[in-house]
Length: 357
Image (tube, rainbow, N blue to C red; front, side, top):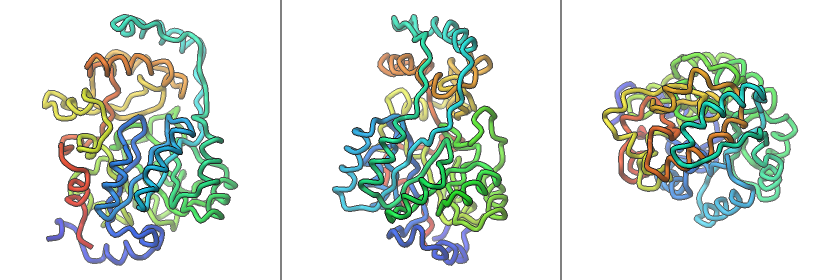
């Protein structure tokens, strides 16, 4: 039975553009990339087995580690994508960094840590990862955080790679279309984890995904994949009816059997005492949505903009909190649909969310 609100018109829309169907995708429910451990090769495989597609999450990895995961997935003979963080740094104010580091030291003292005083700015091994994907092309590459130069899109397309760009507004969609994107990942504010906004010094407005898709669809003619807060068949159907060719889901997979999420993260998602998500830059200096905890309460108001400097500042603290089983000082990334995250095989979750086309 089709979910309420689903119409057969969506079958035509899903087939209208060959971007995904040409890759062998038969389900419009994709597994979003969750960098930092959430996405695993097993989730990518599960997405393919459900008729969709998953992304190897390239963020925070060395090029060598990314190559290893790509090789694991490629060996399965499935269609997949790779997601990269495109450079779009927000340099932190040195004085603000030092003040924030001083404030966080009390949290670090719980684990016997000395937080770094030196500011670390990097590009997440951008050139090495790009070289990797040009030397060994994959079916689909998506970018988030920043918009690569048009020459990057052109080089990947010449390698027969489909190129997607994460956008959070109609203005960003126009920029991505002009740069040569084949496909747009339209991310609403309800999404868990980092916002893909191209202006990370500002928190994107809270526009509902169906409305955002309408605004982006009016601005560009590219196929759209909707993302942000999707965790039920009804929500998926609504977004497909709003003009998306497909959807990408992430948070709903974080408790799956194949997830790489930490134990504190998994348990927090299932904790009935966790009543809300908040957008914060306290952990990384870039707007991101997660479950409210002591760290977001204590530090969201004072955290300066500054990515990746703040990511590196809090990295050891977050890892220590995970090891200690302390969810109050872990970045518990989660979208607004987190209550629907379940502990079961990822393929079952994705299949349940997918309208029968």
